[in-house]
Image (cartoon, rainbow, N blue to C red; front, side, top):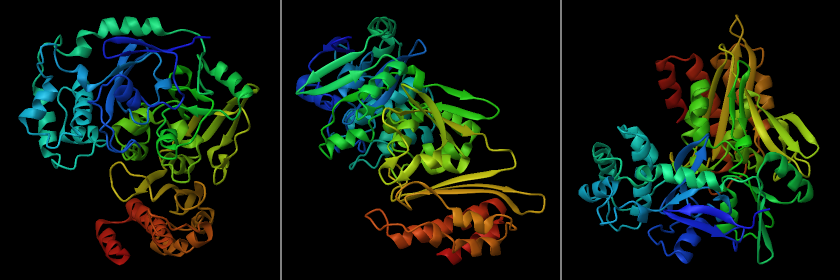
Length: 489
């Protein structure tokens, strides 16, 4: 076993033996290293004021991603390079092109959110030589600014993309070979076990070790991206022990595409899954773009979104409609089950002691099937769903429904199929009258709750309207769409 978490902070090698399992990167930076350019705004991964870059070796290549330091735990940093805003300027004080562009375009007013915005734009600057406006806006989804209205910030991003001096000026380009070598030296096959205040932090070197650990500690909290667990700590003040970190396990980060479908490792983040899913199933790619901001998509995993069993998780309804299957693993072996059977009741999943989600298989929709996902939220960007619905439809040669799968999140205690609605549609002609009759079946399938995101009545009506929308998008004319839109209002 190894008795320290080791990583690089800007240019400094760090080895920590005294780490609480729920200590956040933000607290470590501000309180222990006095790197106060990284700000605390929301402490829940929403505002982006705490944005930093974290680099990791992926397939031998050094990849940097923006993350929210407020919900990123120090225990997840082993073998990484953490970069804060203090590292960008040159030794003589010359600002980085991204920083200078923010000054020249008046992209900062009160300045509180500015360091996080600079880091988000820096992440974009590193990976995109000529970003489009949509690409800039996507990079800024996870950064909130109350002062500027974003236009000066967008202009700063455009200006910075045109200012590309010698790569030797950029710290991460200048140091890349050295950082790669230092990170490679940190890779070991040892299990890291640390303890502070009687609470344990464990970093296993492999999936096999993870399975053995969970056999001994079936109640351990597994942390991959921490986009949910982070809030358990920062908002609910929950005491977790032990915590097992798995975000580094490459065995859980594979994406395999075959004629049958896509197999996604449970540790694959939204950001890394995007290109594959958007290419193979475009509607799924559009959904990922609506999950959090870029920082959340860089941290959060599809496996984690499933494993925590939230009734408002975005990916389960989309995956259930596609007929996805889970592979669960434990020290005794693996087992498969349909994703829809994994969710039993609120807070209860079909996961035996010592089991964890290893992968998700997503069947490739046949060419004749039509698929759509609709997310309804108060804000379009970076918001949790009030409800999320997914539809898969296949018609026979006579225009009758021969395949229909409908699933919703936010409508029940778990993500759930609309079985009564499906039965009302199956074998019927795909027509306005059929859909109108089937709408009433939602009352059999769901009894939604009222909360601060939406009333029960709103959820029920919206679910019905989404079925109508799906019908119009798969069979209606623009004139019909306009007529129905008026009627629904």
